[in-house]
Length: 81
Image (cartoon, rainbow, N blue to C red; front, side, top):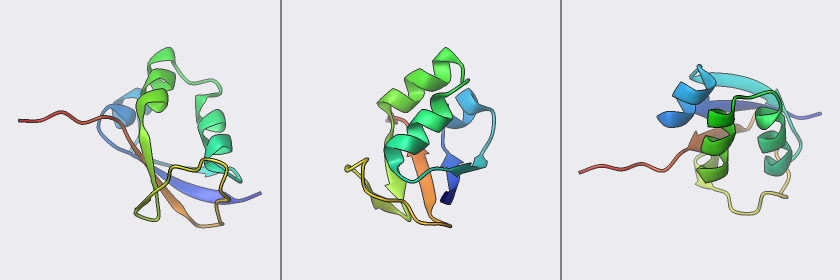
């Protein structure tokens, strides 16, 4: 299995109660499923609305393979002014 570093930002950090975690997942889809398993309803909602960066690059294809040591950023929608 592939171990990836997950960094949570803004509402994701608050929903998961941490800034960072290590998760075993082979794809982004699998990573989202692992994170959602046992998470609060709020955390699952945040995940469903988030975008993801893998090694600082936006990832849209959630079936693409992750590699051992990758860093995945969970970015919920931001609002500002």
